[in-house]
Image (cartoon, rainbow, N blue to C red; front, side, top):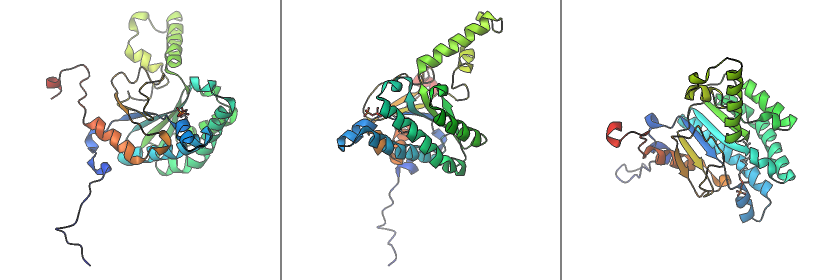
Length: 257
Ligand code: FPP
């Protein structure tokens, strides 16, 4: 039977509501809540992390489908090394298995993988796999997916200061020439633009030493969703929320209009 156009209901999806000309260029996500998600199900924390990798896929697919240029995920912080040894091992194993599994998806979708953080601190197998995928995907240009691994923003800024001081000492830079661009060039994120939208899941409302310099003017979005439950629609909701905000960068509302 032919559908009656007068009664047909056209449901506009969240994705369709997004203004493609007003997309955040760089989205960063603090993926939080794997442990609580597992606990709610009476399972061990590793189960939460395993399911967290599915949410990583959802976030990567939705971001690249919609045309986000840069997606940065906080996968492992410098502070996470203090977790129980077994949990750290599980996270490193998941990283290696996910990289092995997803390399073809990255290639098929023209996604470049990059990393920020002290990857020398990672187990040899994880570092090797990571560098291999970074190398294989280096010419992809649809979206840059950056994994923050053994990453800490204070460590990043401290390292930048050390490098700049050394250059001053060796007369490569003079102190009066140090400006914001010099600092940016010495951060792990030298090839990434500032963050436009920072998302944190699980209801926690803090930054946890993530991209402190780079989020200076980011819009912050906190959701109660636990990371393993995060789906494409949750990312679209965050983007829609972002698009309703007025970014003034210190100016007045009238100046923006
Ligand atoms: C936070 O949840 C999550 C992490 C510390 C790790 C995130 C890792 C993954 C999603 C899996 C592997 C990642 C990749 C990129 C393949 P939590 O453990 O702090 O949760 P809780 O606050 O509820 O305890």
